[in-house]
Image (cartoon, rainbow, N blue to C red; front, side, top):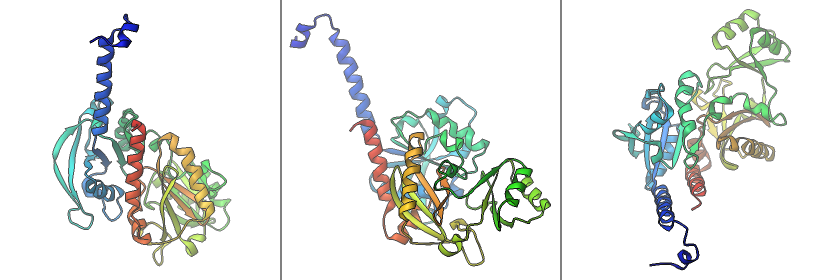
Length: 355
């Protein structure tokens, strides 16, 4: 059958155009049919369902009929080309998920998967951001843009969670990033009162210590030798004693919720892994504005899921490697932030497909 268009443009290769259109249609159809998420995380024995966002999300995803695969990132071989790495991922399907159960996951047998099978890749490998972290995570820089990746490297290891707040001086707590023992001593001596020392490349309060500005140089040397090459020095903010440490969890520019972390009796560490307790507290207008400014800056870098920490009105950290507290937000606020997060991930995926 000769169409009107073919009569008007007889020199056009219509058969070739139809074949290209069929390929495009198949591509879009396959993309729409993707119903799998990939959860990239630490080894199974290192996951704690009491805090783990990935475990929480897997329960909601399965309830929606969306399949979830688990990739034990530390068990993968980083010494191969990215194309080979991403096309032969040793994954196990999460058959069921229940954080109150032991074990919290029922997993299927290992199979080899291609990253192209997934609509969303959830990066949940905890720090430290060391050579092992980078050598494996770097492969995911090659994941196609149509696949939603939360959060996308290389920003996850090119930026530091402990120092990113310094990009926003109007909100950040006073902070010195020291690269030598001499710089550490100078920063400590120039701070009035008590001082907080923390390594740049740890998490969950590991390595955080409190000293007076008159602390001995030998004590500083010992700390430096253990935690070099970068040490964060900040004044102690006594607001933590009266109002704790507020974590605000955001996806893009949406606030999913907040939770106040109150140090345990006799402790100053407002970290849930270090015994702090969770309580409800609504963010202030200034804190919400800080979240908006940070998200607007970091989202274009591929950092969409953020955990922003505040002591009083001071922004102290911006967490993006594997931010947590969604379980605690649900508990203290009586909401389902995990549902809202999955809704947003699905929206992002549909937006990239223009469907």
